[in-house]
Each structure stands twice: as structure tokens, then as C-alpha cells.
Length: 335
Ligand code: SAM
Ligand code: SF4
Image (cartoon, rainbow, N blue to C red; front, side):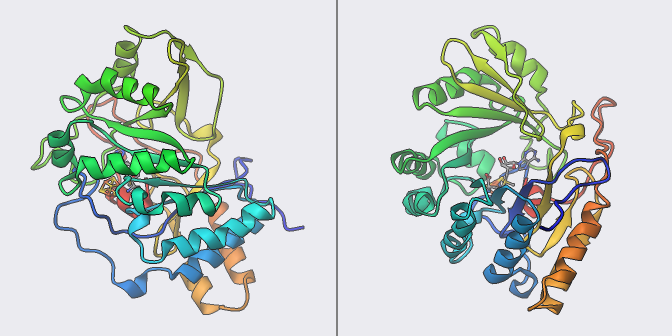
């Protein structure tokens, strides 16, 4: 048996997030500039390379794989990759294959995702107002995403909604979004906006709304029961007594969640980021491409990277400026 991946702080790495493309059919203001220059194709890992890389991680003990981007479902032939990954679900090595999507392509792919063994999806949706949706995503259209949600639920996928908390943008939709999810049997997670991308420039959307304030607001209408549940990630959960739904709060900036971190991220070019909030990165594409028939150098490079996983990150909003701000876009590391 190969030894599992354990970092210097005795945390087992069991969760891999993989960005399969830097491209997207939306241009959310907090994530991308309107005029993005995307990577040339040769920089990207091929689907075969992604398969080999993910499979190596699964062999090293990764049990949960989340596919993200950019928008994962705009990558050509991405369903081939999902179907191929399902063999690790069949073997029992992988416990969950899932994705985070903007929902635009779910109408097309929901059934196929289910057939590939996907059971849960996270759909990002910040507003239920068509005009606001067009403003925040720049290129997105709400009805298309709504049809995607319908298709996902009809296919049997459990949907969780992710919303970025944005002051003066969706503050007024706290209860409408909660009710919308309750009616559809969906859990929901609020994400505190991170200092990335082009925030606050031309669009003036993307102002920080503290989840502590959001939570107090929610408590005015619902009874919040704290859940002990820990996923190893930055989310903390409550259950709403009245509806039974779970509401998560991802607060990377105000809480130190790093002690239980069980994850690493891979970009579509094969870089591995050991921590979302740090610049340290290692290249896995080189060992992958230089040794097409021998996984040992790749495995060694993965272990060397995990040995450098830092204890935590340096974001700090308490001084009203984003100390520890990292310049790369979320679409690069996959959120
Ligand atoms: N395109 C897919 C989507 O939107 O769900 C997957 C990739 S997207 C980068 C992953 C998540 O990151 C989305 O939920 C998005 O809202 C979130 N995100 C992007 N930029 C962010 C930022 N600056 N702060 C907080 N969350 C952000
Ligand atoms: Fe695209 Fe997702 Fe970024 Fe929005 S958050 S621009 S949908 S990658």
C-alpha cells in the first residue's frame, strides 16, 4: 500500500479541487475582468492528463474530488472526463465526485452527470433578480440558470446554492433566497467576498458584507441551530429550525479555519496550490509530461508539494484593508 498524503501539520489530504478550465461563459465582477485573456490551449492539461493526475491523487488517498473552473461545463468533452472518473467511485476508492458550476450548462448535462455518479452539485447564484443577475455576471442570463436548476433536480442531483455575500447588492435578498432554497429543498452557503479579481473597480459591486452581520439578520426571522459538522473546509453550518435546511457560512477572511484543512487545489495547467490564501505553488505538469509512462516522478512531486503545505493563510480584513491579498483570480485556482 502507498502511504497516504499527510502534511507537516499531521493533516491528511483527502480532498482535491481541480480546475479544468480557466474559461467561463460568465464574467462575474468579483471573479473576472470583462476582457480576459485566457491561456493558450497547449498550457492546459489535456483530459487524459487530468485523468492521470486525479487518478494518482485517488491512489494516494484522495476521497473527494470537486471539479471546478472557470466554468467546468464549458470545457469541451468534459463529460468524458466525468465518466472516466466514475471508475474510482465504482472501485470504492473515491467517495464523492462533484462539481461547482454556474448552472448555465446544467440543462444539457444534468442527466449525464448523474449517470457518471455525481450526486450533488454546488450551483453559484447570488440573486433571483434578472436585472441584478445580468449586472453581477455581466454575461449570464438568469432564466438559463433556472432551467439548469430544474434539470439538475429532475435528474436526481442534490443541489446546494452558493451565494457570494455582497453589501448593497444581495443584502435585501437574504430572506427571498433562503425561502427559494427552502421551497426547493436546497441547502445554501454564503461566501464572504475575497479580495481577488477586479473588485470595487468599475462595477461597484463586490463590497464586503460580513457574514457575522448576515447571520444576525437571518436570526431575526429563523431559529439557528449550530451544527457540529465539520467538512475540513472553511464552512460552518447552522440548521434553520423552521425549514430544516442547512445554511453554511464560508468566512475565509474573518475566521481561522486552517487547522482542519484537508484539501489542495490544482489549476488547469497542473499547478498545485497548497493553500488558497498563499502564493506558494508547485508544478505537476512537468513531471506529468516528462514521464508519460511512469507515475513515480509525479507522485514524488505531489509528496514534495504536500510537504510544503503551510499551516494557514494570511488574509486579514481587520485592518480594513486586505493584507495578505493574493493577486490571482478565483477562476484560476477554482474557488
Ligand atoms: N464557475 C463556477 C461557479 O461560478 O460556480 C465554478 C468556479 S467559481 C470561481 C467558484 C466559486 O467561487 C463561485 O461560487 C464563485 O461565486 C466564487 N467566487 C469567485 N470569486 C470570488 C471572490 N472574489 N470571493 C468569494 N467567492 C468568489
Ligand atoms: Fe465564471 Fe464562476 Fe468566475 Fe462567475 S464565479 S466568472 S461563473 S468562474
